[in-house]
Length: 348
Ligand code: SF4
Image (cartoon, rainbow, N blue to C red):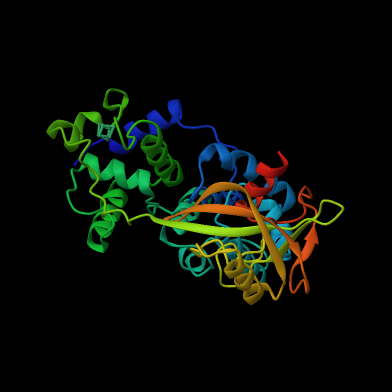
């Protein structure tokens, strides 16, 4: 359809593309992989600093493959969604076991690694290895849905397949990685969700949404999941050194492996009285606590949960169960974000 689509896009990218630390002139498959995983749910500005810190700590997959949980949590601090980091470590271990420590260049081998879905596979394959395959994230989806005036829900399988076909029909076979990154940048900086800057867009001349005035209506997205309010409760118990009781979050729960303040669990709506709270803590941690007054409240969001965490004073009245006293200021303790917020509010 659009003669010169890739040429216009790449010329724009060469002049206006974002300068990001993981974009290098020499291919860096591990660095690309790490950046794409970090960028999945985190803003570019946060990822910049975290990516450099992570690469210093784990220069190659083999270095991350042997990282323990605490090292993993330290390296991923500030990024959230720690499940991504654990999947990345699983993938790094598979690279060591199956490919001698080098990220494989084949599309199928890449796609078989833990944590690498269709988008990440396309990004690594095109950026690090030059394969002419699409990498369709929310930005690319938006640009193409508008440019071709795709009026169907972009998350439906059939629409996703259509978008992939459209992108791969236009992809520049000499610079597929740059082509994909150019689309991502255009979506992030020009063809933005609200008020796209069509006047600055290299694709404006043949953009169907622009000519039909549909920019604000497209892309069509599925209805958002309703938010759920949760009133979570935790207890802050200090010893004479100022250390705080915490426990490791069990496997299978959100933020598993991190440290939480004693409570029924941060996704558990727990409006009961002090006695009910003490009982819930005994059931979860095997610890006997006496609950005192409310100290503070913080807000936290996890997926579609809007959580108000109420923190109470408390003291040990018997067994400590699986709780242990930890230094709240020790950067080596992988406190969960809700616990960190509570402690920062009390101690800050
Ligand atoms: S012309 Fe506007 S709507 Fe079309 S791709 Fe460019 S920024 Fe997006």
